[in-house]
Length: 137
Image (tube, rainbow, N blue to C red):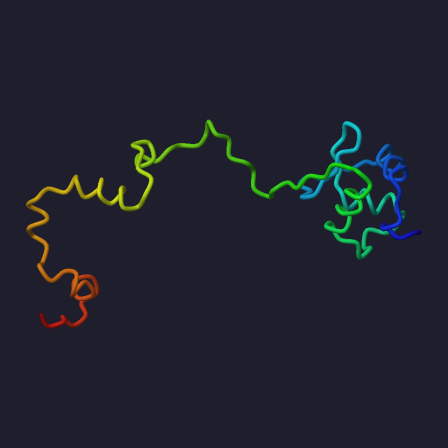
């Protein structure tokens, strides 16, 4: 058994040729030839150390990069495909800021509804929402 930090490119290539991995969802992977393999398990296999070795994924990735291998990070969440993504009505209309969205929404409110609002609404919003004591005008 040797330290994973002492591995050579040839040892990684040799381990990759016989490497079998059935689990899915590895975050860090390495490209060896035409295969994408999990980075940490491959490094541990090449070094001949047990799976409980203290070498973490980030250290394994650095070892592989130092040896000239391409590494990749895969997110846990599945990627959202663009054709499945729906635009909100605000975005579809070209509204980009919150002020534009509020302005567009308030245009739809009739004048008669605006006239029914209390004149002290801004000052006593807590009174109208939660029933707290009104502030004197």
